[in-house]
Image 1: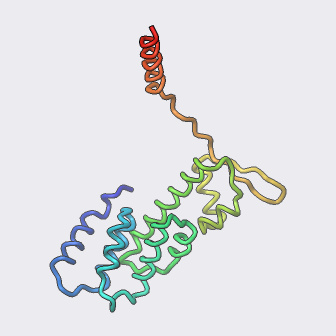
Image 2: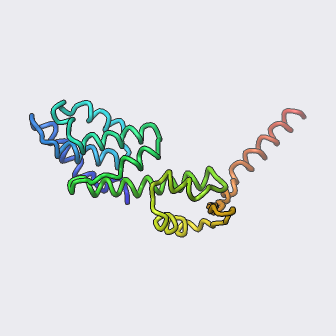
Image 3: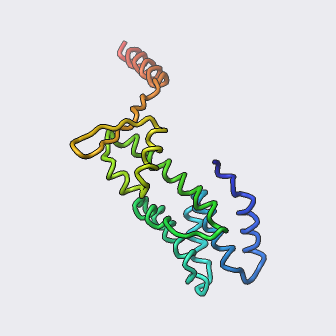
Length: 182
């Protein structure tokens, strides 16, 4: 899954927006969903401001704008709450891809920020079912422990790659200081 996945469609929709005077809500829905998927949040915000007021009342556009606001504020709970919506076929694919991408990012963030996290906290944040969560953390090689009746998830410890450049810099700095002292 890469960012160029929807590039051709995005370019076509952007040129349509420039060339035509009155656009249907479908064009704005698709373009907004693609901007969100490609993490072009500023473009999504500017698009929202360009949408005519009469079209802004569309429920799906409002929902996409709520997703944009949640992403801009790094609010995962609101994002996962607002993405639970019955999307039309026009935007279903980019929104589903966005959901997958955001879940991957959430697990990556949790894996680097926490040594352990209660399963119920992660379930609450990601709005996943217990089975979905078990599959997700199993693929990431996370372990689980019991704390009474609660399940604690422990991300796989990622070792930092040895930094040869820092050692070289330290050696050069030491030699330089030694040179200056003599």
